[in-house]
Image 1 (cartoon, rainbow, N blue to C red):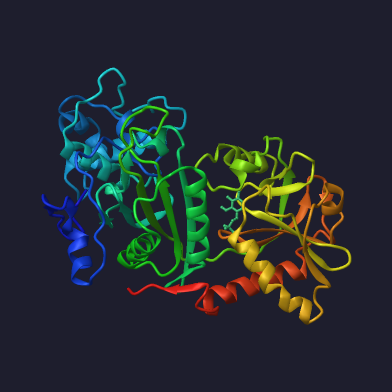
Image 2 (cartoon, rainbow, N blue to C red):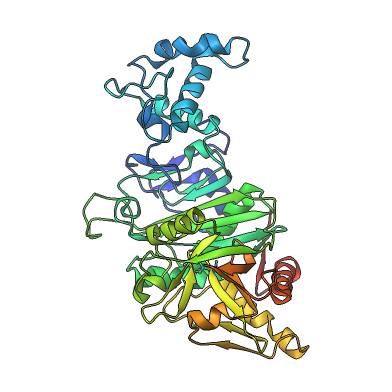
Length: 432
Ligand SMILES: Cc1ncc(COP(=O)(O)O)c(C=O)c1O
């Protein structure tokens, strides 16, 4: 964990972390609270078995690690650190949890690590290339500031969001230095928090400011912002009564490439759909969503589509579904049993211009049967990650001509244009 950000000094009186907050005060912004007695940390988005859990050498890792150093002769980094990095890299690539041959993994000899050794191993894990995405900045109300060091982007393992799933989350795309639909996503975030009985650690405007400052610190101009509200750390009980403070976390992920509206296949999911109470709230219990996505991929598709308890079309794993009917109506399932997608709602608004110019005969939200959906001229998936993605096959049924439809392409273009040059109500500038 190399000290890349501003030094963080703690004010005893106010229990406030003044590294990033000193800047805030200078600019008259509300400082984020610092909660003392930091509990043990878990990686925000690392796999459950992070490298440090599997890699073991001895109580003196640098000596044992040198065993694998000869294969690295000529490399520039210090041998101990480099060999640790390679060991971590190898351990991290083992998919079945077994010790990969030729590494130092030894489950019966787990080292006891100091805080700085843990930090070194977190650095090594980061350097091992085990992550597929680039994390530009993270905010945590636990440490009351922003870090741009990916190794330090951790959350407490006793956070109830980690071990009980008691948390909610949301996102916002970053496009050309603007946050897209931040207000709309924040509205849903706060609604989800209310439904999940998570008290807010700060008021809305402070949270909004924290999120914008995090993007600002990241210097990311294209990517995504993800944020979580957790009922907080405190213990491993089920009840949140022992959680003294709820927690806000946010992360900025760099993503220079734009989604491509290429046609895809979907399948009807065999994973039980969430009950409406949980489907309408964006909580962190995404196992059904993950399994729906995996099932879709295992069947050669992009994702799975859920049907609701009455057999009508519900939504995709993490996206809404839209259709263009035979009589050129844009049709979407109502949002009463599914997540109210910010992108889908924006698509419905932008599509009005297609009604005006005759491209669509109308727009409606109502129950959609599987039969009607499969007989549609066009089908599309809609969400902030993919924007608008045409579906050309659903199970064994070709949709329309079996090729990407013109309305899906037009809606994709409209959303992209909105992200780049839409009104201030959907574009929040980031003051880098
Ligand atoms: C279950 C589910 N439905 C729909 C969506 C689409 O919502 P949005 O357009 O706000 O990204 C998401 C987004 O993550 C989701 O998780």
